Image (cartoon, rainbow, N blue to C red):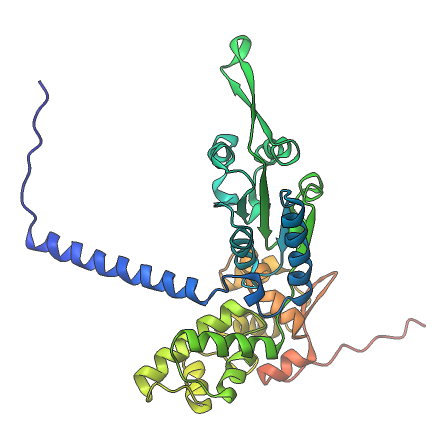
Length: 357
């Protein structure tokens, strides 16, 4: 006979823990809602990426006029430039269903099957960080992208049999921060491949101005430009810094974001005039001081800073390279003259070349 479970009332400590967890969950939901509210919901609301948006609008319009499925798309570029925002706006424009998956979570074909079989007619399947798909999942995806079918193997050995399953036509949108890691067969199956560039200062300032209105925050134009200057050409960073400056203004000022308020708030986060944070400056200082300006390999820098090399390659180096503070040479990374000036350090002299004769 099954034993009845013993039910006891919650203790005071349990009630406190539940209350604390509920409060944390509520804060996370609020944070997610604010983040979603700041994202453009339609392609026409996008600021920046003008050429990419123009090509997407043509593809969407042609698809609607011909009543055909939209071709598969691949977005690549550094983090925070709007790949996910564009991917989420496309099904809204088309009025179709939408599914989201992560390349890191799809470790076997069985993980991908539910997304493919549940895809509605002409719907969109978005796979973020698609370069992290294992080879076996990649190859399983090929017939689904080309012929809208998959082959499912049941059983093992001599008793194994293959079932060919037809899928409803769908559009696959992939996003990646490392396009070079995507295999050529997968890359060639995307009809459109778009690279997202960093945003200009004016574009970031307009994004900050619009999102300040969404947050019901009064902000001066000078403060918009100051936050934009320190956002490294990335809307995600601009939004994060706007929200922090808004909190600072609410707590330390009258709620209005002026230039002095924005400057004080960003200084508290150790974000300098170029937008470098503590980790960026530590990266430059490690090369300049520990390795005498370089050249030095990224693995050596990562070990010295106690960080994974991928973090430096994906998060730290792109902006430093674009800003001309560091360069890559065949022998490794090297701090430039501009990097020494920004750090306030004296650039070491190049060793004199000896006369061979």
